Length: 401
Image (cartoon, rainbow, N blue to C red; front, side, top):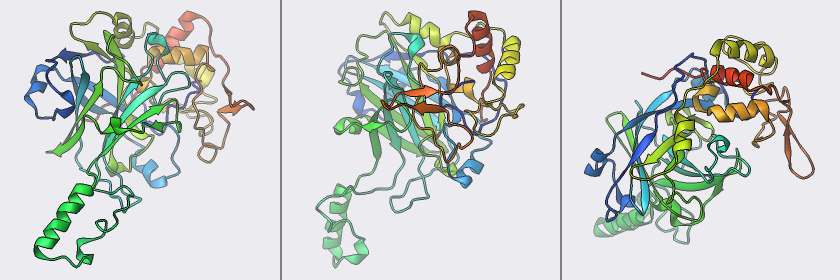
C-alpha cells in the first residue's frame, strides 16, 4: 500500500502511539562560538535532553547476506538529544549507547565505522508536506550533516612522501619525530560531510569547508557523544526566522556492517526555539497522536494491502512485491502516510533495485525521467485514511534496553 521506499528487514511491535515530544533549543549568549562546542562543555547543562527513538531502516534490501542476517532482528535505539542556539548557530548534542566502538579503516572494504547524522528540511512552511524522511525527495530537498568514526586517512595530494609507513623511511631519532609530525599535520582524523539530498541515491556533497564546521564525535564508557552545529542562515537552509523547525536523526552501527541506508532513523522531530514566536502548526503536527481508530485501520490495511506488502503477522505477499510495512510507523509522520495512501504519486523517490527486488517494479520512468508509482490511490474518505494511518503508526520495533 505504501509505495515509497521506506521499509526493510525489521519486525513488528505494537508500540505506543505517542509522537515524539518537541526538543527545546535553549538560547545562549551570542558571544559563544557554538562551532567549537564539545560534548562535555558546561554549556550543555542549560539544555534538557530529549529521548528520540531511531528505528531500524533497510530502505532497499542490501545485496549483502551477512549484513542482512546481522540486522534482521534489530530493535530501535534511543538517543538523547539536546539543543542550544544563538543568533549565529544551532547546535545539537546527541548521545547513544553502543557496546562496541567501531572505527572505519581506510585500507579495508569490509569494516565499517559507527556514525551519526542530522537532517534538515529545506522547506518546512507546510508541516504536512515535509520531505521524504530517508534522504529527501524531489522538490522537497534536505540538508544532511554526517560524521563517522574513522582511522586517520589521507586525501590524494602531491605529497606522497608522508603517505608511506614510517618503517619504510630512512628517518631515525629527531628526523623520525619530524616525519611523524608532518604525517600528523597532513592526516585527516575525522569524516565530516554535508550533503543536499532529494531522494535515495541523489545526494550531492557540499563542495566547501561547510562540512568541516562544528562537528565532533567521541566514545567513552560504551556511549557515543556527537555535536553538530549549523549556521542559522546559509545558502542551503535558512532557519534564522523560524520559531520551530523539523529535524531528524540517524545512527549507524559498524559492528553490524551498517552503512548507507542500513541505519537507525528517527521521524521528523519538532525543534522549538526558546523565546521565538511561530512554528506552532509544525509542533502540533509532529507531536499530535493519530486520531483514527486503530482496530478499524488494521482491518482495512490488511484487506487492501496484503497482496503487495508484508507484515510481521501476515506475509502472503511475494517478497519485495512492495516495501514491507514492518516498521513504517517508527519514522514516518502521519501526514506522510496519509499522503502516500491518497496521493501515491505525490512523492516517488528514486532507488528501486531490480537485483534486490525482482518481483515487481515499484515505479515506471517515462522519457522525461518522471517516475510513476505502480500503486494506485487506495482511499479517498478522510475517516478511512485516518483509521489506516492510526494503525500504520503502531508498526514499529520495540526499543532496545
